Image (cartoon, rainbow, N blue to C red):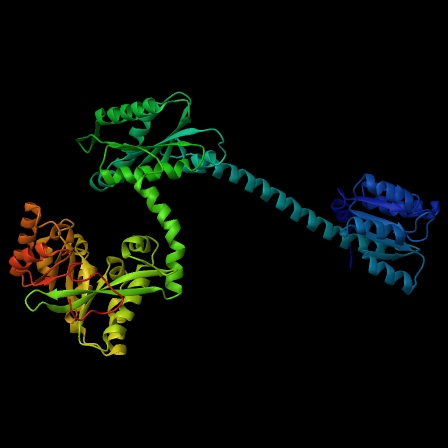
Amino acid sequence: MDINIKELAVQTKEIRILYVEDEESVREQTMMILGMLFHHTDVAFDGEDAWQKYQNSSYDIIFSDISMPRMDGIELSKHIKEEDPFQKIVIISAYNTADYLLEAIEIGVDGFILKPIKMDKIVLTIKKLVDSILSKKIMQSYRENLEREVIEKTRIIQEQAVTDSLTGLQNRFSLNRYLENIKENHILFIINIDNFDSINTVYGYENGNFVIASLANILSKNMLKKASLYYLGHDEFGILCDDSYGKDTVESYAKELQSLILQSTITLNGNLLKGTVTIAISTGNENLFKHAHMALKEAKKEGKNRIKFYDKNLKIEKLQSRIQEFSPILRDAIDLDNIVPYFQPIVDNRTKEVYKYECLARMICENEVYSPFTFIDIAELIGLMPDITRIIIDKAFQKFQSNEHSFSINITEIDLNDNYLKEYLLEKLQEYSIDPSRVILEVLEGISTTGVEESLKQLNTLRELGFSIAIDDFGAQNSNFERVNAMKVDFIKIDGGFVKNIATDEKSYAIVKSITEFSKSIGAKVIAEYVHNQEVQDLVEKLDIEFSQGYHFSEPKPELIDEV
């Protein structure tokens, strides 16, 4: 292998070496060779001297004799490799014995050159070491440059991450990061643009952005002292200030903002637009963002252009407490098979006999029976409703396989959205040998009101398979008579809130009468819920309502009641 000394000298220009040799004549001779290749060379006169120099400086390569006073080359190499296993070490020795070679290999030295030193041998060794060192330095330089580039890009990204490009304001991430570190009490305003989605839909997203920028300008010009403004994304802004303002001042400021925004007119596509905002306010040093959004949700339920302060008595706060309390209980009840059906008879008002039963879910926990009012809304919120519906379907089918009674099962819109009912119901019909004509599927009126096409298709398919369809709690929501007529339902259950008052409230009586007449006009049979006494039952019969259900006959029970 021919190696160009001049080219090698260029490569070794920045390489630092330490040469260790105790014999002066050998040292001078070897230094003549090393001096041709290296610009940075330190010399040590024995192992101890070399160890001291190594401790106080750094070297790319160490060339060391073996036999030296105070500390020989093998011992020196051991110390250095313990300090830095990657340090390049070349042993130069007149001893050509297997013991020395094996010991040097075990230590991990990187080369072994015999005396007298031959030029081609040392040049070849140096070439291999220098190539390895330069490759490592190139990689190290690449990593350092990459790290610097990553640091700079990270800085830019972090700056962008806390700043909104549209408004130039600090964003949600910035607010959250600040709130994580606060110890003193603060006040947080969440300003939400009412009906902003409609603005985007009608006028386009570019105009929606113009509204956001305009509102940012209004808010920035009307800030409390020592307050910070944030754009939280989509239709929300946040204002954070210290807790030096009283509730009256805070409320007055919120009203002032609402008034300023309402008075401001924006021109979009030639149209003058006035908007309103709903403002939620929380105070303290923990969960400010969470609490403000809870208050905002509560305010949105009440309408628009509202101001709502967070307090622990908010309905949504109570709901979250119930969720935390009942979620593990409900999950355990499902896992332990403690969701069971209770059966409430529905009476035929002509024969006075039980016509069918409604299967109502109950949860058993520590010998206590929980009604669906306790856990159904939680089950819907945490995604367990389909599990409960499946359990009730299975256990109801099992219960009614040994008799001829008809029975009804409540189906939620969540069940329809999951699109499993057809397959599951057909499976259970076959498993328990039940005719689908005995099964009534009760759906809430809201399904017909919202007109979700996929849900309606599923109900029509189930009806074609032989199941009956009932609308439950009709009248409780925004009753859509046209939609119900199009659904061709078999039964309409009048909401118990009206039925229970028909003996004492003329409006309730009129509503029940109207629903009954409508139901008969579309060929649907009527069931009156919440029949709780004989007086109500007499009026139900007077209105020619076919069926009654309520505590006047029986409360829901774990077993069937053949007579009432």
